[in-house]
Image (cartoon, rainbow over all chains, first blue to last red; front, side):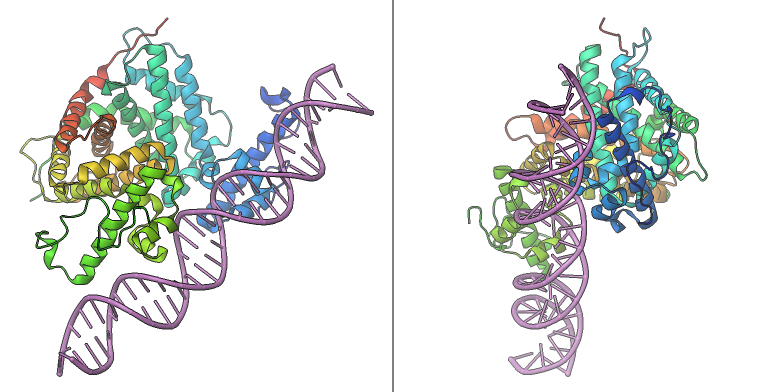
Length: 234
Length: 234
DNA sequence: CAGGCTTCTGCCACTCAGTGGCATAACTGT
DNA sequence: ACAGTTATGCCACTGAGTGGCAGAAGCCTG
């Protein structure tokens, strides 16, 4: 009852809800629109409740009847309890894959640059107003909830594999015998994770631009990280 | 009944069981030895059963009474069903952390070299005869079982954080504001994952040495992976 | 080696995530 | 408005993981 909200009445950050607001998705069949609404209501309310009482402090049943949806329906929309809370990040990586599918590389550009570019492109596409806030809450939850962290990493891994597939298909890269494409991708992911962690730790409400520049900095630091020397304390 | 085995009678690859075989762990209090035996029996039988019928095809209850142990005891030994099947890898990374705690770096050596060295050191310590086979089965399971994959990645992430802590403590590295240590570590992990995947895919019974040389090759490929260029197919 | 002390184990009951099946309601196109 | 499709709700069920308590097993003194 606390954070209650029917699929129609969104919980926190809705998609400018009423009127003829939504630009592209407006003319979708009613069924689809409903599905989206429930989906968003679930994500929003889930983040609300989880942030308030912790991931483990909220049962699916509670979430479901806060949104007024049956548990069965929940599992037709998301694959797990973790899944709903990780949606914001997944949105980004899905966009990344689409970007990767479209972009043409600069002549003579490196693979890392290409991938990096795709990620910036994806970031630019997260136009939805509440996205930053959603990611923020999602990440903070992930940091304090092992099972969410694990789910996030697994998703990340799946996405990487998908990306490698695209690289093989579109750019004729050998992703089976040659470790380099995979390494390049993992490096980018590592840099992104670093940037994301920094960004999440920041107080206030960070912006997408800040995240992008953090990523830029991290990627720039990669070559240096390979030659960094160490001396024992002793 | 199939793969049955009491904690005393190991299932597959035991620790040269009887006699005065075990060198260091011999003089442990009986209680500890028993615990170890149950632990190993659980891992062995779990890998047997999971390999045979799939991770999801075996319930914990089945596993538990194959080893003749109560479910309650299982959960005092391992944190989850996934955990027991990932034990072999965890053994390696635990050794890695210990290695990292001990080693002194070469003068002027790079961080990556240090970390790499620790990993070889850890690998060398996996003297237990059946280790390679256990890892192999564990990895193959992980590849076909999402929840195991996720668990493995999460463990890997925790280990990385622990390693960063050591780096900060022992080598006065700034692991908070500077992305480079984390990046170096992630690069090593990425290389290792590649090597492990190759190694796992190989037919027959690969050896630790092969894994080590795969890792060496992957690490060597890193600088190249950063400068790899791409051209669109078109 | 008897005794109490500590620690591990087994059992039981319970919560909660996730699934399958089926009847029903809600949208779809014509 | 009607038939056909598709989402939804409900119900019962499996299986992972936990808490609590009683009793057994290893441990450590004298």
